[in-house]
Length: 253
Image (cartoon, rainbow, N blue to C red; front, side, top):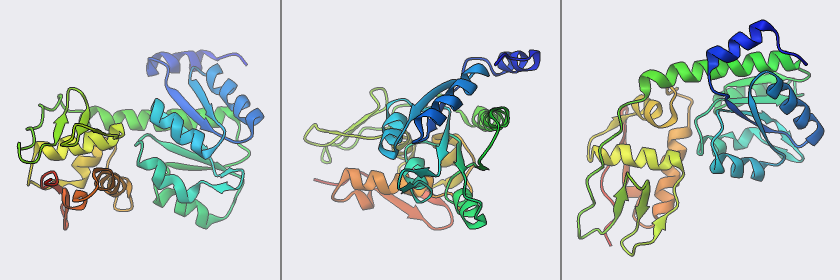
């Protein structure tokens, strides 16, 4: 498949190649989509199971995810919030299911688009490019200068949050395994201890997109942070009604 002059021009405008993760259990179909995306100037990676998709996102975050609704026996719609806990990039769901309820649910729980099969490769590319442009436009005004290093936890608490090293260590020196989004959220809140940070600011700064009332990604990140910290973690980040979240301090040992 050869690129038209318009496609070449579009690739020049978009700049460096953008990476798309194709999550599809039909390997031949995934390969066909990957070839099409590559023909149109996009980088394509593949994952053929839900676990492989989570691993791929955690290893190297893509710019966009094309997600099949069915991966074998796995219905991915109820699990989109799990994916949202790892990344804020656009998610385009592909499905042969024409039930309107599923489309509504997918959009409400974090998907950015819900596309019915069959779809031409050209239309898929056009939709992907539209979401990439929108994500880029949202991220540009939201990307702030690098945050200064957050204040170190008090000596009696013993926790150490290092922005330069992008790590959180317990009082015994062991690291707390955080995703990039989890770390960014904690670092931002810890920079303003005791002060509520509104959800839209958190979403723009951490997920690089605006917040919507039906968006549960931030709530999932907070829940995961509390769980990973362990005992006392539920009091580390407080929900402030009608505002957002506030950092109240690391658990005391």
